[in-house]
Length: 255
Image 1 (cartoon, rainbow, N blue to C red):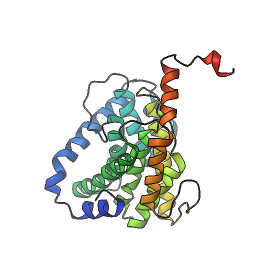
Image 2: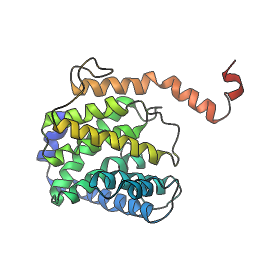
Image 3: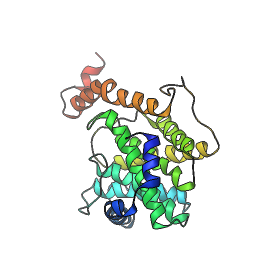
């Protein structure tokens, strides 16, 4: 049942009492570490830079909150985070923008919970094809999940699907080179792609079959990109690790 159509059905029909405990914790804990990242100079301060340079519009607040949470987490902050796909960064990326947009749009707690069902499960849906570890940056999967918060804005199934497709057609392929402060910047980049993708989808705009890895249907596009992340980038992962541990010498690359 982990596919876009059934995820939306689940979000529409689930008893809130079945999900409110875990989603309530996700809202509480992830918001708290995001606020810590904005208050204090953790890491490269990506979240603070986004907020101070681009302003208080909700789209920038959404990007800043997720990035700031990563700033803090990747630089040693001990506050807990509710994860997605085994990753704190992914847990913050797929939840904090939805929470921020929910507050801005004055949505009820139940509406935000249902939107978080969509964002968390859409992120998990992509990761099931990629696998636990890959050179494919999981922040992109999580950002596409957050983009599926198009649900929160009253988007149709087709608009939600198009948001996901647009996001991974745009930002898919960002490489993972370990958990570290620059993850916050990758989160910022991926979420900006997701917000653009949402705006496109709400206008009925999407990338078409045959344009890169875009396939006949959204689920096949997710599957194709997941295959690239799992199989196609396997050697990429090896080469990144070899460079990081010094097994591949930079002076030998030009030979």
